Length: 124
Image (cartoon, rainbow, N blue to C red; front, side):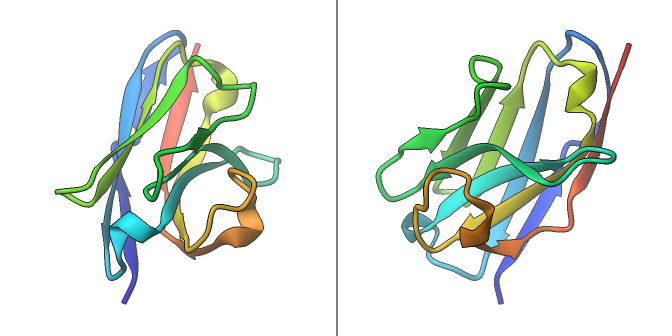
C-alpha cells in the first residue's frame, strides 16, 4: 500500500522559513516523481515544487522559484520542501504526492497517490 505522510506544518510569520517533510512507503522510491502541492483557501490545488527521483530534475512555478526548494533523502525515503521568504499567499494545506512518470513537472493529473496534507499558515 502506497503511503505518504506529511509533517511540519504550523504557523510562521511573513518572511520566515519552514521545512515540510513527507515520509513515503509502499512503492519504489527511486522510480517515482514526488511533488508538493498547495490548496489555498478559495483556490484550486496547485503544484509548488516537484522532483523526479529518477534523474533529479525539478520544477517550480515562478511564484515560488528561488524561495522554495524540494529535496529528497533516498535512504530515508523522505522528501522535503524548504520554504523561505514566506508570504501570506503561502497559507494553505500542503500535500505530498507521487507519480509514476514525469509529466510536465507538477501536472496534477499524473499524481495518483496523495498524502492527507498538513496545514500551514503564514501570519502577518
